[in-house]
Image 1 (spheres, helix red, strand yellow):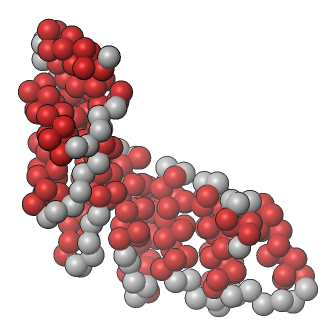
Image 2 (cartoon, rainbow, N blue to C red):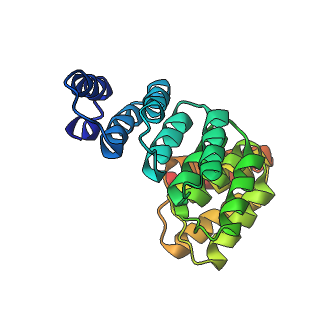
Length: 230
């Protein structure tokens, strides 16, 4: 567990090998700690191997195990692997939660699969699993990458209706989506909304807004945004 907290995945694997050589039985908690250590360093292949070792030794993987491996696959850009693991959880009747979905959605976002990210969020809702700020932000970011500004703004509206707090990162993703779609008025409106809600804008916010103004041929507006940055 000390190795896990420090993200020392190689040391964690060594400790597990030492336990095996001394016939000290490992349990789900032991395996989860090793997988978590691998996950912290994005070692998805090792995380998968450790989980396969669990199954070979007839030790049950639980929600924590799968969440760590899915998160690891997401960080390693293995979007298909993450979705397959989620499918396995459902087949085996292992409960999924907000963390599971957030990790799988993150894998879709990193791979540029915005439709799949949206689909996963719909599945969450249908299962009664609450979507939080992080989940929404990642889906909005996935929409932004694909220039799906309408979807991004609809999700922002949904957050507001459901009382889910937005943060700077959420707004940055939405403004970025507006910029890609050349929606300068909506980008500037989003900055006004941030001010009204007391959410801090940062360099990324202003750069995205300037980009939206430039694409819309609104160079004077772009200069005004730059003045706000000073």
